[in-house]
Length: 384
Image (cartoon, rainbow, N blue to C red; front, side):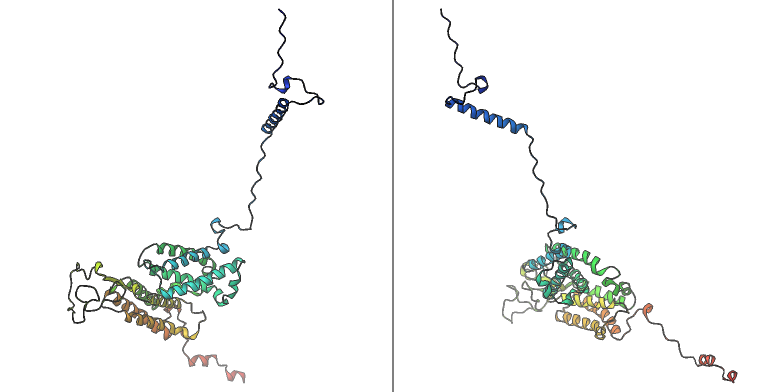
């Protein structure tokens, strides 16, 4: 039998197994597809062998700030500005009825001090916006942040009358401000503390004023009587059951001791015990008495206006008028008046110029001795 001819190579075989096609011959579709597949495989092999290029490093913008990272985005990079933000946020929350507040006077003073402190910190940082130039220069003095810090501490005591979410927010802002301002304007040889001698408050008669102020502050936490749900004081003759204001005037009862489970005098009846902080403008006597202590702690060599000697008397008078407006037969008003009497004792001595402790009084002048003049006179006979 004749030999069978060899089979022709399959067109789908690899290009390396068949001879290259001359450029003059026509190209078939299968050959073109094989050439494209070979080019793809060569590209994949070269890409797998080439090392992957590392991504370019991210370049962070350097603004020259080298302080704590948590203050990088705070205006002025100041923790006092952050503290002011917490305090102002607390003031906004105090608008809600279920949060305590610092009173109208405390709110106004806090807002003024906050604006002054923020303007001072932004100017110190060197990136002050345009509104800082409109702040009066008198608010840029170093005494203003010191007084503002003392104000926040005093208002923190007022908020302790009822613990809630507002207290930690206010306390955190106060601590941030106090720590930085103590380092900047209070402590140190050039700080505001050089004008004060706190240790002099433990000497007589200033210690009497210190004890009296402490008693007045404690008295504000004590009961000052009862009040209705709307905050008005409870009348002496309460109407018969119904509501605290219901019933005609002739339906009055004789004030007698009622059991504690009486619905009219229980929490459900809308009657509750109020403290001194629940009275209107309760922050006024606290701030007035605190100003009295600051004046008492001033060093003798500090220059002061002449009218400043009468400020303690005015502080006691304002506190007394406030107490008389809300006085009731309760332990709180009695303790407040007792402490105010001790403060008044010092205020009168201060107005008369007799408030300096014994160690700070100037030495008395030596009495005149005529014999000393005779000893110092020259001998007229010896000159002759």
